[in-house]
Each structure stands twice: as C-alpha cells, then as structure tokens.
Image (cartoon, rainbow, N blue to C red):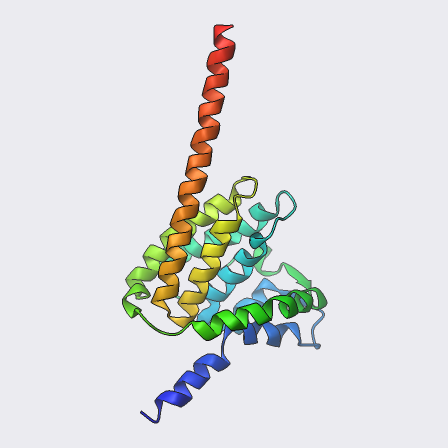
Length: 213
C-alpha cells in the first residue's frame, strides 16, 4: 500500500496541463512545433496531440480552420485504430509551429479549467480503456475527425468536445470519462447526420420544384 501513493503522484506530475505549461513557459525557444509536443508527450503522445488539435475547435474559428486541424486528427485516429503505439505525423504537419508567446497565452487561459478537469479524472472502469477498447474509441474519433474536416457551420464544437474528453480519458485511463466522451460523440454524429439529411431533403425538394415548373 505504501508504494501506491508515489506512483499516483508521478501520474499527476505528468498531467497534460503541466506538460503544456512546461513547454509554453520554456523561454529558451521562440516557437513550438507539433514535433516538439510529440517529443515531450512520450507515452501520452496520442492523447496529448488529439487534445491539442481538437481544443481550438471548441470555439468558432475562421473558415477552413477546422479542415487544417481535422487532417492531423484523422491521421492520429487512424493510427490509433490500426494499433500503433507511437504516433507519426507527416513532416509538413510536424514542423508546423506557433510562437511560444502565443501558445503561452492560450495555455494560461485554459490551464485552470484543464487542471480542474484533471482533478476529477482517475483510473476507473479499466475495461473501457483497454487496448481493444482504445481501437473502438479510435473508430469513433476517426468519424468525428472526418466531421471536423468537413465544412459544416458550427458542426465542430460537439465533436471536438467529445475528442478532448476521450483524449484526456486515454491519458488518465479513466473509463468513465471515456464513456462520457462516447455519449457526446455519438450525439454529435446523430445531430450532424440529421442536419445532412435535412439539407439533402431540401435539395431534393428544390430539384422536384424546378423540374415541375
């Protein structure tokens, strides 16, 4: 029993919020690339990168932004579905960088909320975060990534929220959080599917109208 506490402390010390703060406050670098995050994340790289790429989609972004962020999410989700243990990204994505000062500004605003979420997360319902379950979660995230990639107005918020929650669940091995993320993800898929069907129906009705004129 005495060895459990140090192990838990080590897990908390390596929380994603601390990882992001560490790289954002590193004044020895002027810019931070995706490759830098990949190198620092270690065995949490999949969850960390998925969270980082999904997070900006939680707020309305300029047209085309979701497609830029959605592509690496598709690549990462596919690799996780395939069973790859360490992520790989094309050089064109891995060398993409932002100013460290800009990253630090974002991290300072989001870290307090992220830390509160991390305090709630803990290892539980482990059968929902096994290697097999991870592949099922990856399949859902792949679908959500495709939705993010598509130019659907305001269709990126709920899929992004689901991916952020699932990513944190994978990092903290929290099956309950993964289940919560799945529910949000499934709901967002149904909403988008319903919206697409409504648009398709409207197009067909318009075509019928013009054909009958």
